[in-house]
Image (cartoon, rainbow, N blue to C red; front, side):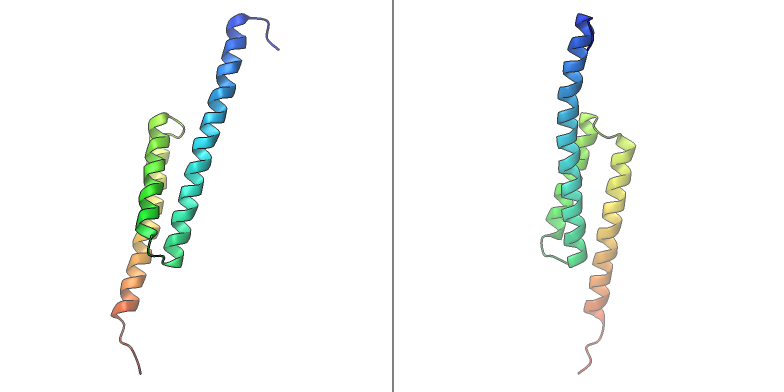
Length: 99
């Protein structure tokens, strides 16, 4: 344990920040996983799940929990999955139905 008063305070601040950042990161991962599973399952609420995941990613970047480029990469990957899923759904709808 540190003897210097300023270092003791820095240690307290670090513990607080770690807990806060861990909570934000956990929420971020949870929202992303839910969005991906909704996309894969073709759920009706997939758009809403993606929107919430993007919102969490943006908030994490704004708070400095993740870097802004990391946020952009995560959003791009998520939107790419959503776009490919919607293209597959459209191609299935457009396919002729055989009786």
